[in-house]
Length: 137
Length: 137
DNA sequence: CGGTATCCGTATGGATACTG
DNA sequence: CAGTATCCATACGGATACCG
Image 1 (tube, rainbow over the protein chains, first blue to last red):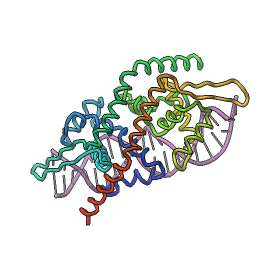
Image 2: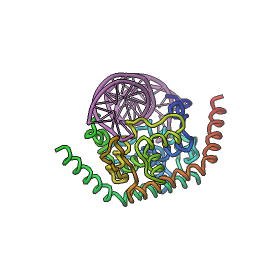
Image 3: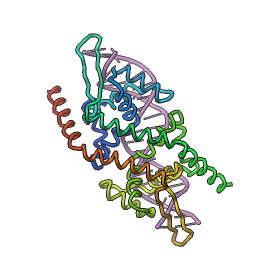
Image 4: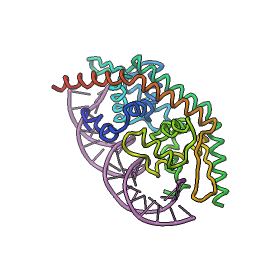
C-alpha cells in the first residue's frame, strides 16, 4: 500500500458511514488508543514510541507498518503533529496537537473507566459463563 | 461459528492483551457503539434495534450475525440485559444494565465530542491532503 | 533512524439459508 | 420473530526486505 493510497481502504470500505464514526474509529483503534495515551505524557520519536507501546500492549510490539499507518491517520485528522528534522540520522518527533490532546483525554477517561470497572465485568462474565455451562449440561 | 465458540476467537486472538483493552474494544466496536447509544434512550427488541441502527449507520443495516454477536459480547460483559419472553412468536427485549448505562454515557460523550470537533478534523484533513498534493506535484 | 513496498495468512464480517 | 450455521470475499495486520 502506497502512502497516497493509505486512506483509500479506509474510504472505500466505509465512505458510507457517517464521518464522525470514522474519526471515532481512528481514535479508538487498536494502536490509536495507545499512541494517544503515550503522547499525552510527552512527545516521542518513532522507535521510542514503538518500544513504549510494546511495553504496554503485553507481548508483541506494534509492527512498523501499523504504527506508521496509525500515526499518519491521526496526523491527517489533526490529532498528531509530526516534526521531521532534516538531520542525519533522521529524527522525527511526534506530539499531540491541542485537538489531539482533547481526544487523548477523552480516550484516557474511557480507558480509565474500563479499568475501574474491570472487576464488575469479570464477575459478570463469570456469571454469564456459569449460566451457559449449566444450560448446556 | 457456534455460540460457545463465539468468545473463542476473541480470546485466541487477543488473550495476550491487557483485559481492559478488550472491554474497551467491545464498547467502541463498530456496532457496540451504536447499540449502546440506542439502548441509552430505551429498550429495544432484536429486529427493532436492527432497524434503528440501520437508520443511523448510513446505508447498510447490521447483519443479523453481527448484531447477535455484539449483543452477546455486551451481555457477557454485563453491559446489556437480555429478557427473553417464552411466548410465540418469540419476543426478546434488550436493555442496559446500570454498568452498561455508565459505559454508554462515556461512549456517547466521546461520540458527541467527535461530532463537535468534526469541522476541525475536516479542515485538518484538507490541509494535510493539500500539502501532500503539493509535495507530489 | 524512519520509514515504504510487498507478500501473505487469517480473522472479520456480510449474505444467505435454515430452525424453533 | 429471534436467532444459528455455513459459505466466502476481503481487508487487516504481521514479517520481511529494501531505500533515503
